[in-house]
Amino acid sequence: MITRYGYDVYFTVFGICVAIIVVAVILTEIGPMRYAAFIVSGVTLLFATNFFRDPERNTPSVEKGIISPADGKVITVKEVEQPEYLGGRSIMISIFMSPLNVHVNRNPISGTVEYLRYVPGEYFAAYEDKASEKNEQSVIGLKNKFGKILFKQIAGFVARRIVYELKVGESVTAGERFGMIKFGSRVDLFVPVRSRINVKVGDRAVAGESVLAEFL
Image (tube, rainbow, N blue to C red):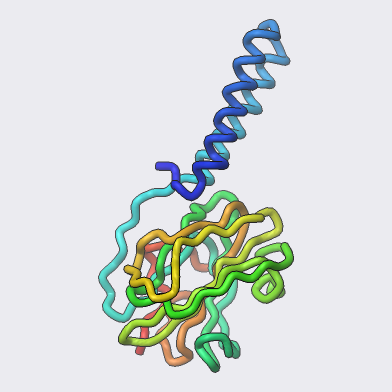
């Protein structure tokens, strides 16, 4: 399934690839030029289909669980100061999303959106530490009866568009889709410092399925 958040880009790419193939068939003879057009169009369409795929996920029923908002590799697990929304020390879990990962993002917990801020910014490589503070990003705070979390959708070097469908006061469910980041990017998740952390650097996270941490 192709994510609705990527329909604009995907179907534009699809149309261009089909047009190239049609032009190649009409204007070129069977040979290297036609084959090249077929190969380039096919590879481009395959990449776009892979990037904008949106598989179903089975979110585990863990009462105090904090679910991964993104697919990718865990690149940071550390204690940091997070004055925004959480107002103190927290544990930051960063997930790097390569262009080969699913880029649809999902809610980490069930609760209420209490905080939302969009930040225009730079486009450093998503795996660099400074990307968390300097890059274009959305900052989202959720709360439920167990506690509060903060997470950021952060644009990478290639990504130029962050999509999210959330608003302050809205009730959300853990594992539900809420948006995506187009092309290489990262998501930073901030949880209370007294949480149980279930992942380490180098682990692979699956959006909507991996339990990254648990409230205590």
